[in-house]
Length: 297
View 1: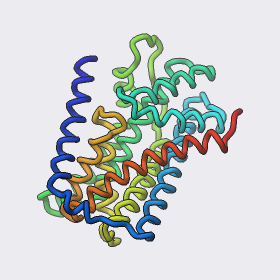
View 2: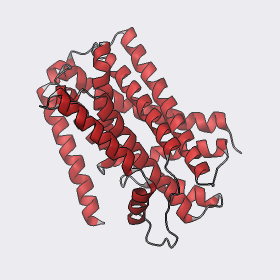
View 3: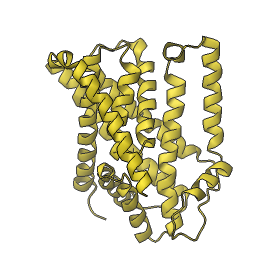
View 4: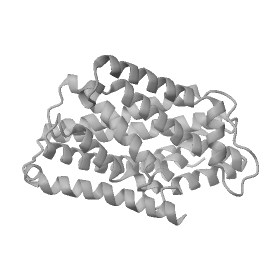
């Protein structure tokens, strides 16, 4: 446990040091940034799209519970998901999972089913982010490889991601992540195609929100959209894997490293900082809307 905690703080420290170094070098560019009303409009659209993305993610999680034959009522489940989403920013990066496990157990499900639902979701998110990064990013522009090598790498990566989600491999991975006090096995009986498609939609929506935020700070030609989406998916996936609260620092550092060539560094720094604020505001807004509009069962 201490080793994991040390790794978490080390990863956060490295990411923040990189960001601080870049910020110090490019502060004069950021200081000159001024948003017009049209650019604020892009930020507002990014906020709206990100709220929709989180609501969509809640619906995907509920569909995963239905696939496990332990459905929750729509209103109750959506409110639970969106309200617990904010807990991922608490140090430890597990409290949103804990809240969902306890709620699913309280609804009558076993510990195994509750655990399976919260373990599968981030696995599918990482797979979706990896698939979108491979499919969308112009690999020859990012790596010193020819177009033919990029196509082969793209195909091999997509096959590996798709094959790795087969129940045979997922069940092995899930067994390694089972809780210490959990006796029943965690097993998936079928390929999680529908939840995977749902997570692909979620990552694409988040990527659209990111692109809108970048557009508020720098011109984004249509030809740059695949690069933006691919870089976002890669950076967001790393933020999900590296153990920092809510991916803070990891996502920003990765996005800056991947995009600082095609985009001005000052505008890019402003965009990633703004996107973090948009993301937190969207999660808070989604939780508030769920409590106000969804109502109590």
